[in-house]
Length: 198
Image 1 (cartoon, rainbow, N blue to C red):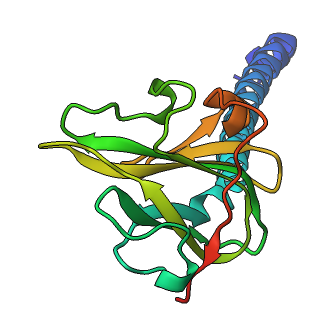
Image 2: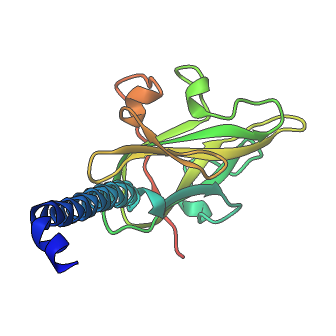
């Protein structure tokens, strides 16, 4: 046996070297796969964090109808059925800009998205900016029989990104500023927001 090992030592060394090489190659392949998996996971997390970071201010903005919340002495129009109080909540310390409120249909046969309405649509308010806090105004909000209306708010955040919160609450990015997106006539007829007590 000893003689056999001594005579074939070169062959045995080559077999051992081949086994070591195969194990090393296998470990290298596993390491490369792990690096790729970790990199892909890092890129996914980075993308998710970037999307979340983009929405930080936008997620703090909402608008809704609420009856008799604005003091009568601060209203530009008398309260009638044709006009409703609309409130805007900006829970971020920075203001939002180019704010467009549009009355849209929530239920019934009325268009559900603000961009579906023509230029000059009269159930729309435009504000140059809305600071931190609770603000309001009145808007013409006529729906019709068996139609429930709601409010859609579009705005540009303090980073210059534009968003729309649909009447159903869904938040979506806009490709351009709300003024351009809704094809609003210029010069704009800006409304003045009224501060509302919380």
